[in-house]
Image (tube, rainbow, N blue to C red; front, side):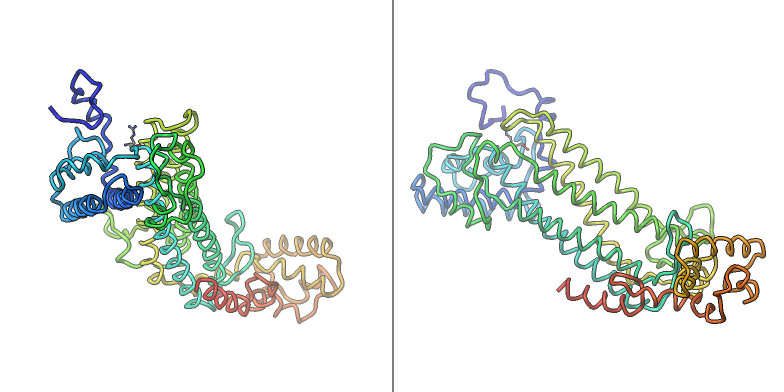
Length: 458
Ligand code: ARG
């Protein structure tokens, strides 16, 4: 018969199926490091409050460290009957310190213990994700710099709109991922609150110096309300929201890579080492990485939805439903980290087919706005110029020519203001370099943006 720390009032042994159903060890075993760190700080706090002696604290800490070693060298045994990581560690502690292990849980509940563990996890992982995002931002900046003079069509409605620098397009993603990074940093700041001392829900009768525990664990604050501390999981929802937004950005980029790598676009070549083939069609080279990243976005959204749904009707304070928080959280964190990591590795190896992107920029009337702007410079009101160029486009379409391929006499038919100097105004180079407004695609602007981006990252 397996002893449980809570079975004093029970007259029957727990049903095996119930043990398996209620067990969370498969998931919360990944929190062992935080759980042990928390227990060590708790021992020190108990000693400081003279609830245990300093010598007892030393012994407990020694035992906890030995267990950490066992887990890390994979010598630790897990079993459903011990439910969760907290009970596993406490149970194992007796092999090292005997009955002294029975003092560890004084002034503590698994409710504040798990709240601590996941807060430590979110702090740690949030920082790591911010680190991946920094690397990704660097990779986008490098890719932009390497292709600084490559022109490509910019799109709206997935219709060719106006030419832009490929670098400008990449730096748009830099902005998104830099915001993602600050979202995670922000989330980590808010989660930086120490819940131990809240115990089951109401606080504890023991005189714990909670600030001391917080200091030992590297938290900058202690929780203000014991009920909130054990029952809230908004920091998980926040982390998953940040992860979901970041996945939206990754997924949009992925979609573009899938399109650009198609024969129809042929804008980029993806590295062979990051693609796979087909088991039947020998010619295939598939963009699996972007496809999988796009697909994994669904998992992360699913985690956020699961978490919001788990929490939405829970009365205060702790409810066992909340045990369902860790699966979605950890799955989303692992998924996001894997996606960020693979793009950090793949981005430097993407090559742009500049001949294709440049020739695409010269076809599809991408210079129509510039022709209208030319007429405005010559004194025509913009709306009138828009109409006039619209007619020219319709005419050119009929002739199967681009605007810049029409003769001056043909162009003059649409406005007598048009002179020979229209042709340079319709060239891709001028279209790019005249868009000098701050944040625009002119080459010098993008160069400056890259310099600023490096500073913003450092
Ligand atoms: N495994 C639990 C969880 O993840 C730990 C807290 C359990 N508390 C309780 N009273 N059963 O939420």
